[in-house]
Amino acid sequence: MATFLDIVQLKKSYPTRAGEAVIVDGFDLRMEAGEFVCLIGHSGCGKSTVLSMLAGLADITDGNILVGGREIHGAGPDRGVVFQSPCLLPWLTAHENVMLGVDRVFPHGRAEERRRIAEYYLARVGLEDAMAKRPDELSLGMQQRVGLARAFALAPRMLLLDEPFGMLDSLTRNELQDVLLELWQRDQKTALMVTHDVDEALFLADRVVMMTNGPRARVGKILDVALPRPRDRAAILDDPRYYPLREVLISFLEEQEHARDAVGSEAA
Image 1 (cartoon, rainbow, N blue to C red):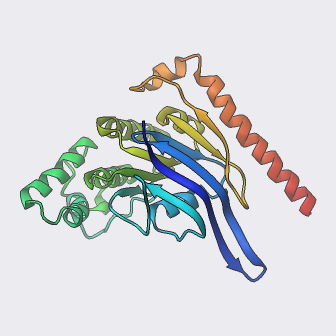
Image 2: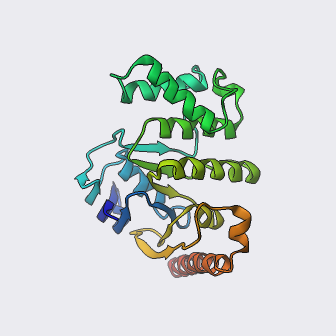
Image 3: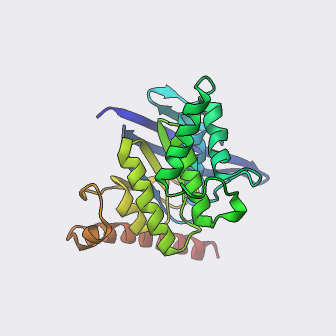
């Protein structure tokens, strides 16, 4: 398959009184069209920073990001973003929150067609009976379902997810992972997801990209997840390949933790 995303020598730094603070430096990643990749690493390593630059929500200090062969310049509807917080407008209903984006992305479409798009995706995430409810009438999990519906309804070429289930309880998280996979498998949008959860990464991803600790974080290792699709949670847990894959991720994270502790001890 052709390369869809090409991140080349990406760098992000901020000026400080003590000099340049380099968060990410020399980050390289290529993704094929339709691939699902999870980005994992310890807190503060720059995972969300990479995603923000890819979304066009943070400036790139150096390097390049090409989506579909074109260098990105700012945010755009070709990249749908789902954040950890649902980010819904509280005075609008679930349907109106989705329609707000649909109307902007498809301004020349017929009103009836736009309405059907919003209703279709809200139904797909299980909110057919809650479309008229406002965010304060919805649980956090239901609000995040609205966020997923909105992202897919905009028909982006790429989906970016920044720990979208990190604030949810384990049962709701599992339910929404299943919803996300169902939506993704329908048209297999190229997807990059930040997560801190090893099991979530293995359940969702084709590959897991492991980031080194910051400062100057970059790609440390990449793990191919050759587990069958469509994915069934129980079947994957019974797959003899699952726990060796899990051990690779845990070992890498432990190595990074020890390295961080060592640096801290030297600084002390």
